[in-house]
Length: 355
Image 1: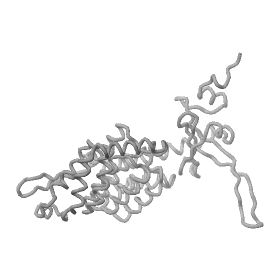
Image 2: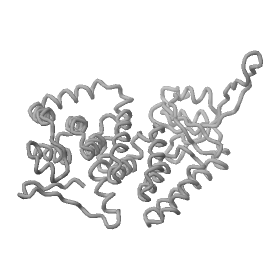
Image 3: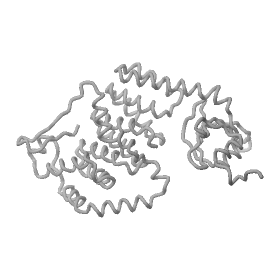
Image 4: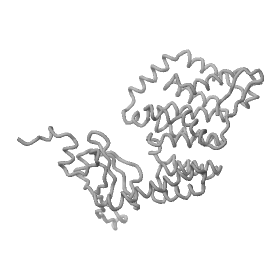
């Protein structure tokens, strides 16, 4: 008696359909599909079928990610998710195209990126810029190249080009998918440390639209607002950070600093901060007073959120380890001649260490 489809696992089923599998028994290949293209307008409109190439990767269960293949044979642009049935009905494997065109192009792209990273680490910024630009010629939306080139321009102290790169990054939704979290945090922290506080706030604020529940993201947004003396926006971000992770040391330290500055004009003047509005201090005390309620409300909201939104945030230990204050410490350790600045009150009352 032959096996029924119900008896087959997904790997067997994909093999039975003739889908190409990688060594880990998942689909990762170029496929083609026919699309109807309209040419002309009005009475001159004509339709013709066009063969389109896509890069397909197996996600989970019977879901697959599909990204267009650009003119340089690279997967580029936003992806869409399809089912196994859609893949089987509308797409045809193109193994020869993958091996002859896409794999060599991906290897060349990685070579440009790796060479750029090596030169950037060695301080060869102009050479690194050249490698990253070559990568962007091949794939204008390559996230790693955009982030890295932005870091190069920040190290060159070229604020105009840094802003251009930031705008390019903010236009690419895949920048916020969690895969590039360490680059994302490093770039935002570098914006702040270069004194581009408004840009850092714009950058992190935009990111909250895509990754809503990342405590490191909100902490960094709070820090940028702290630097530009915007107490209320700083507190808004800190409150979100606290709701996500009440035990995060960095955010609690910033709460403490704000409370220490309250009603101490001489200390505020010494650290070049404006007076703190009473409403901000009162709200901080309310947050600590209503700690349990805040956490319960947040957890309830998390449970009620659609799965597709919560999946965008990388909440793994590895993801957290690369974010926030840890990413900042790593960036400082890698920067030549990095020095920590400490600001103290005349009475030695409080030690500000917010580099």
